[in-house]
Image 1: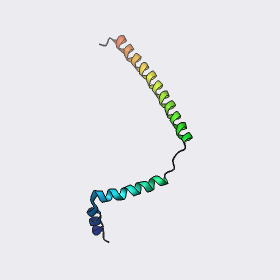
Image 2: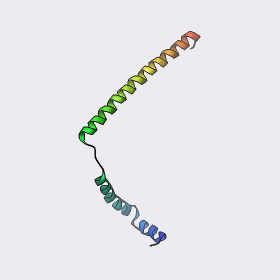
Image 3: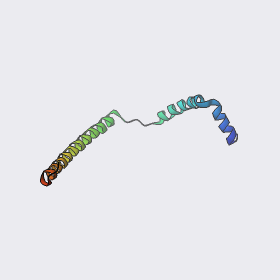
Length: 80
């Protein structure tokens, strides 16, 4: 089958034909996936929550410091 004939054959099924081929391919790929254990999911979830909290606290502290510095500049040099 030439490239032109392949293109014509693929087009004859249209998007419905491509979708019908797609579903079994997805099922096949999901069968090959190595899923994490429940313990591993919990461990990584805890790490994400802790790191997110730490970054949030850090950014809050940086924001407070930057706000204080801007306030000081405005009071020192007579801003609006």
